[in-house]
Amino acid sequence: MSNKVILFGDLMSQPTRAVLWFMILNKIPHEFRLISIANLEQRSKEFEKINPFKKLPVIEYENQRLFESHTILRWLSQQFKLAQYYDYNDLNNRCKVDMYLDWHHLGLRKATAGLFFQKFILPKFGKSESEDMVKDAELNIPRAFKEIESIFLANGKNNYLIGDQVTIADFSCYCEINQLEALNFDFKPYPILTNWMERMKQFNGFKESHKIIHKIASQSKL
Image (cartoon, rainbow, N blue to C red; front, side, top):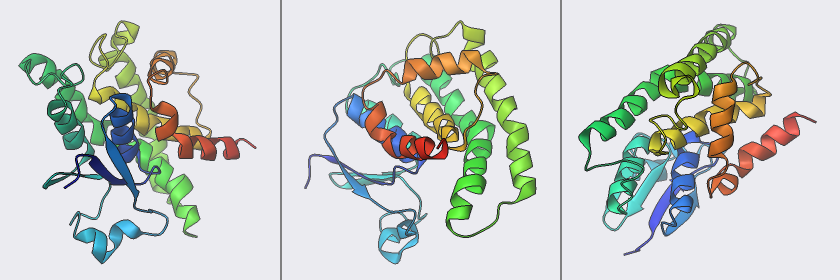
């Protein structure tokens, strides 16, 4: 029985990056086990035994396995007594974090992950992008970014999504947005968002968890 958190994932996966970053920042003993998306290992029969949904990430700790990154981040905060990131003793504060996390999937991830998948992942497998899906993503990303700026960052009054304390919501949100750098996305129209992104980059674990995306982004600018 390991006393480390075993993380099954791939740094091409936004939710994997969020979980790894959070564990590095908080010095949570862990072991990273690569499940290669490029090789479709997450769809293998072997990995199906670990996560029947065949998705990343998954963590294993003692006799328990958990999937879904937001559940994992909540669990890590409580298991390792990191209430500053998800205050399980303060219902109102916790619900504010949950409010973002519930919004995240359709409010942000559908568009950002959708664009990244169409523009970057599909060509790697020799497939063509869907013009309709690209147009839908390009229409909804500006809306999502404006909502983050005006609602969650309160037009610049908040340093982080929920206020002046960084929470698990920030890690999930940042990792979703950051992948667009690999597509040379123009962030200039969103100064409040970019200021928040700069603050997030200062947290320990950022470079380690984003090294693959940064490498891709650097190559795309050549």
